[in-house]
Every structure is written in C-alpha cells, then in structure tokens.
Length: 191
Image (cartoon, rainbow, N blue to C red; front, side):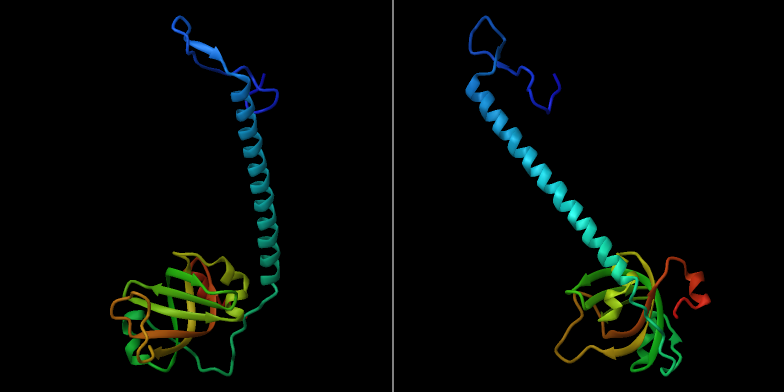
C-alpha cells in the first residue's frame, strides 16, 4: 500500500496493554485521520489552483506591460550624470543617476517609491503612471541596477523621506529604464 493515498496502510499506535508494544489504530481514530487527510488534500488542491491562477494573471500583466513604451522626451534638456553625494548643487535641474535599488515600495498600480543608492548616498525616487506599468517597472526588485532620469526637488516642508537619515531631496522621475549592466546604458536603451 502507498502512504499518502487511499486505501490507507495499517497504522499502529502505542499499545495500552503491558505485554504489547504496538496496537492497530482504532476505527474512530482512523476515521479522524482520514478526515484530516481529506481536509489537507482539499487545502493543497485549493492552494495549487490559486497559485496557477496567480501565475496566469502575472503572465497576462507582464504581456500587457510589454506594450507600454517609455520614450525619452527630446524637448527636455539633456540630463547631467551625477552621483547622489553631489546632488545638492543640481536642485531643480534634470539629472541622470545610476544606482542600485536599496528599497522598493509599490503603492497601487500607479505609484512606486524607490530608495536608490550608489555608494555615495541614498535618494528617494518617486515613479508614477506609465513608469510603474512598463515591463521593466514590474520586474524591479531590490539590488536591481537602474538609471533614473528626472528633476531633483527638496523634500517639502514638514515631510520626511522614510527613515533615511539626512535625506534632503526627493526625486521626481520623468523617464526611467532598467538594465543589468552599466555598459548597456551607453548604447541608448531608451527609445
């Protein structure tokens, strides 16, 4: 007989009698074991079904996200490539920052907060609308390498940027793309 499938094998328990070590399980105990087994089987089937549905939904979302294309706006000024540690002098200007995602928080479908680090400091970036819905935006995870283009602004009075000590700026991104190797950024991956 196969364990884990019906019909169940003979199940033994500690015997109540002095001269016997093992005894066959009683009918009421066997009935309870079968109920527990059936309940676990139903839970596992429901879990597998839910996982399959989630996988299909995720694949559908990724296919739809491939249709969202982020284009660099030629009317905007050319961004200056800057390290996070030297950003204070570029307040209100369009800059390009390379870094790794330190923290990532999604707020619904249209808003994403990224804490970016580049070895010289940390910066909170706010991405919205199409930037959150594009294929690369959906695949972002911590430690992903990114290049972010946007305008640097002071944190509004009375607000703070998470739990980052000394964070004075937040970054409103107008264009963004994801890549895994810095050398690819020179080829102009933005359309």
